[in-house]
Structure formats: C-alpha cells, structure tokens
Length: 504
Image (cartoon, rainbow, N blue to C red; front, side):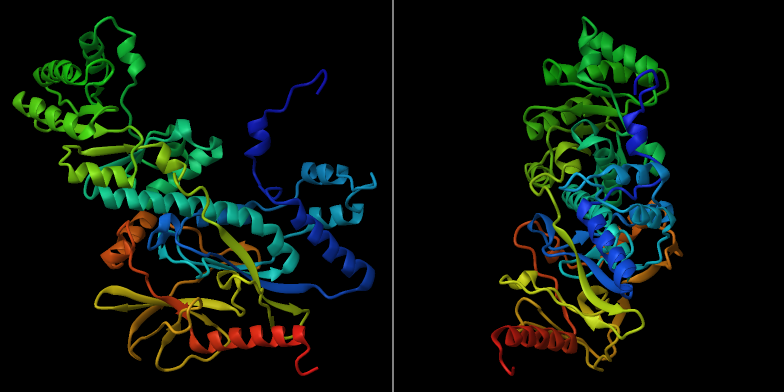
C-alpha cells in the first residue's frame, strides 16, 4: 500500500476468526441457496452431515480423534468481518461482473451460526466409517463449515495417531516432538505439536506451541554450539556452566564416542558442583551400537542416571527395530516423520449429507451412490454406540437415532454384509457422540489437554493389543445396526430401480 504501512501477512492470516477458511464453491452454493429464497421464496433447507474417514491411517487398526478444540474455536469466532465482505464484493464472475450480489454480502455480514454439533471427545480411539462429528443446521451454514472442519480434524487426527504409534513403539520411554523446522508452515507446526502431545508425545521443542497449548517444552543445544568452539570439551563445559539444570550434550559433531568422553568430563564437573548431568544426545550413526557403547562409558564413569536421547529421522518402525537390537536409548526425539505424518500425507476424511428437510417438513434421508462400495454413504441421523466386554472394547455400532433398536444388539459390516457380530442384551456400552454446540453456541468446551491425553491412554488400554500392532492389525468390529443396514440397502435398490425404469 503506497505511502502506508504494509499489512503483516501473519496478522492477516492468523486473526480473530477464520470464516474465510473455506473453498469458493461453499460460498457459491450458499449464494445460490440465498438467491433461491430471495427470488422464489424457497424454504430454507436444513441438513444433517457426518464427518468421518473411510480407512484407518498408516494401514493401522485405529485412529486417535483430535481437532475438536480447533472446531470449537472456529465456532466461537465465526463471522464475516467488514474486511471479509469487502473482499467478497470484489470477486468477479466469468463475465467480469460481481460474483455476488450486494444483498448476499449484507446477508453474510449479518449472519450468525445456528448449527448443532455432536462430537466424539478428543483423545478417544476411533475407527473408519463412524462419524466423528454430526453437524445439523441450515444447509448453507453446514457447507461453509465443511472445509475448515475437515482441515482441522483430518490433520490433527492423523498426527495424533502417528504419535500414538510412536509412543506404542517407545513403551515407557519418553518421546519428544522435535519437528518444528520440518513442519508444514506455522499453523502446521502448532497443530502438529498439540496433536502429537494428545497422541502420546511427552514434550515438544516448539516454544510457541508450549505457550499456546500448555505443552511441556524440552531442548538441548545444536551442532553449531560445538562448532563455535575450537575444542568440543570447552563447548560442553561452557554449556554445563551456563545450564547446569539442563545439560544434555549433543555428542556426534565429530567423533561420537570421543564426544561421549568429553561429555563425561563435563558431567563429572557438574557432579562436583552439586548438579546432575541430564544426559547425551545421539543424532547420527548406528544408534543401536553407539547407544550401547555410550551407556557403558557413562556407567563406568558413575553417571548411571544420565539419559541417552536419540534423534535422526526416527519413526515407530525404526524405534521398534532399535529396541529389538537392544539399543540403550531412554528418550526418543521424533521430528520430521511425526509432524508430517510421514508415509500418509492425508487422512482422507469426508463430510457427507445424510438427511435433509425443507422448512417444517419431516426428514428425508439422503444417500450417495458409487461404483466403489466404500464410497456409498449411509443415510440417517447417526449415533455411535461402543460395547465393552471383559474390560476391553468389543465393537462399535452405528445406528439411526430415529429408529428403535433391537433388544439383542448386532452390527453388520457395511463393506461385507456377511460379517456380523452380536452383543449380549446386557452388554456394557456408551454412546460416543455428545452435544458440543447448540444453535451456534458452544455448550461444552473442550477438556484440558492433560485430560485429553489421559483419555487417549485409557482408550488404548481398552483396545486389544492385536488391533495396535503395526503389521496386519486385527480389524476392530465397526458396523451398522441391522435396521439401518436394511434401510440403506433398500434405498440403494430403489434408486437403481428408478434409474432402470423398474416399476414405472
């Protein structure tokens, strides 16, 4: 802006509200609905949408639900500001004229959300095809929310699941999230750090994430600290003197085992001063061998409490392999492959219309067909019921809240109707979708991040270990309640019959 102050791009993006974090086609549909009401007096349509994913990430047996906190933040601040409306008014159509009428821009500026949202709590273990969110309200509002809701849930659930897998491999060892420098931008780094902590990481190196989300922060020093001194020993001694309560020495700048010996000297000096050397970090080389040799040197020097931290492109599979090799590693710093959810770039969550009504009319269920059975949607207004047996999760039933349930619960695999599972009439269960937003207002704020972490840990303890293994995990039973399954099949048949002219 000539003669004035250039607007800070970060302030422009990360602001009070994110109503513009949506795709253009969501607004063009909202405009078309508004136009129909304005011109023809059409009744406002109300819809129910399910947000879910079609397959478990990382070829695994489960996912960790995450991102609800971001959803509720969005709902609390959702509005179209004066600047938003000014921008939308400038958009042009193919004929060079304004894309949106001024009346629609005014409509947006005055609009307030009136949706209801039911959600599965953050930290819960969830599975493919079951709704994580159920959104009900004016169709145009639900559509405007579709893109940001998918953005939040897809990414954060993906990273939280990756972190849970890393923590599963690490066992009782600590896991540190080290991925800030390789994360997908500012927002990706902050979201990933929070999701990783929800999923099982014990701390992050990301100071801003620590401040914003209340996550413990951990860190040591870099190779450049050592390289800024002529002698590695002097670098360690200076660091020890400066930070006697945070002395973890990065020992692989030159020769790793010589670096360990220099770190031991600094550690013994700390001990003489009444402090404890926290440990060493290995960032390259044969981590199994080097950790074993380092442990011997540290123990021989009497530094038995010093921890060995390892980093260097770690993930759950490499951690598992190193443990099998007998690596003497106490703390795992996992960066790139955690915050980028390495080897699966996206969760693939979808947001689908499942029920619709005009004005005060009754609900009409909607179904989307596909030649791929996995992409055929399930009509109805859904709830997820989780059954337990012998202290473990036994299966999840997706049912229609408007249909009566049989006294003998059963689920039908939507991808293979011959696969069915029955539960006892007196089986313990809980319904997972809970009210969090009513008439556009948040009525249940997200729990503390520590509560969410504890919920994830508790759920994993109740998930059979065979569903947590990395290779060919056991398929946890998730299916449709029989009457819902029958309704779905009947709707598919009715649509195909109409298309073929049967009964016409």
